[in-house]
Length: 82
Length: 152
Image 1 (cartoon, each protein chain N blue to C red):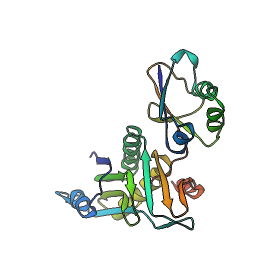
Image 2: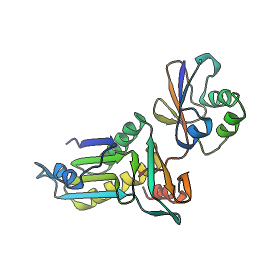
Image 3: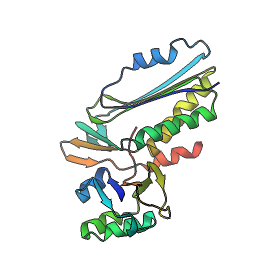
């Protein structure tokens, strides 16, 4: 399974902080994002935001990054700390 | 000589005096200490702020802060580096973030603090939600923060 986390405004839009996705449904982060978008209109529109950032195993990653079983993926809006 | 890096991500308030004491304790090699503290303002983008909720990504936050401190340590001759960032509920006037560094000479310490703050602002996974009389909203990222990275 792939553990997928959502943060801040995105977490609120989806009303979901975390889900698990079977590893065989996607090979890259872009495919995982498309797969999640298929969960419904709410998910499709929230994940279509071009500003969203992605992390794989707690490091920022690009859409073509390979993903597999045991990985932790996160989607989140641009950061605003400091 | 290796740089002593210390990171804390915490809900509790921090004590700037205690942080300074820690940077200076038994440290006769470094003649310069630079520190930056960021605090909650009561007005942001013309909206009055009564409360701030800071969310973060536990695990990734510590990793990113450690990477940023490590990059500063690789770039300047530093003795000690310290980053403290709070999360949870904060009110105007409260301190959010502390960055400190010591070095043999001032320019390295000053530049390292500015560098770490600029990268922390755009890389560390924190998100601010402001509440005020007009309701609550997630703070939008600023283009000027991204632009600040160009100088490094």
